[in-house]
Image 1: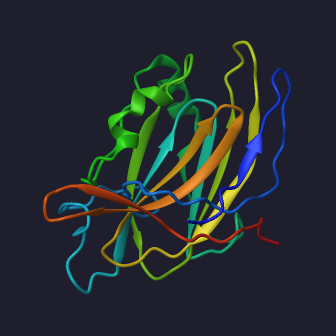
Image 2: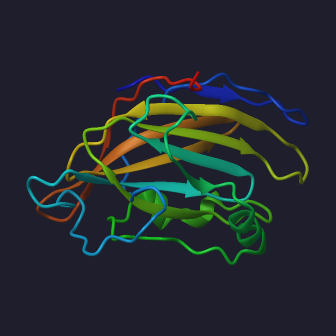
Length: 212
């Protein structure tokens, strides 16, 4: 089991974090390339791509107050690598605020995280997910930031990030999770057995920093 990097947040004040590596804990994964484009065809989790495919899929989550970006073929945040913004844009934040934001799926198998998505909702902050297809065999770096919507006690989780290399034909779920006063970033692979049961497997991720 990989170490879980956690951040404690004090109420009524903002606590900052240094760049951390992702924690892995079994979850379904989905994904798509920069400038999201739905996949033409999708098969069940654990069989996401045909043999020999050089693609993988990832699923990430967003909502008002959360910024999530990922960079393909990069081991750092920023730099010359193309950025895909999953959460944090004005349009998505406004839709999340109004509760009208929609999920974007390319067919990744459901997991407890998506089945219980409403539990991630906050005040004027509806949670959603986006799925992307990305290149396999290349490093993928994710950067996350969370600040609670200013309604009562507040806390912040800054600069959570990590790098991992998705494997061809596999699905992954990348999520920022909250437990009491802690923020946990996780990367997990989703698999499905012959009976259709979903298995969530931890994925090793490396710490990352901003590109120089």
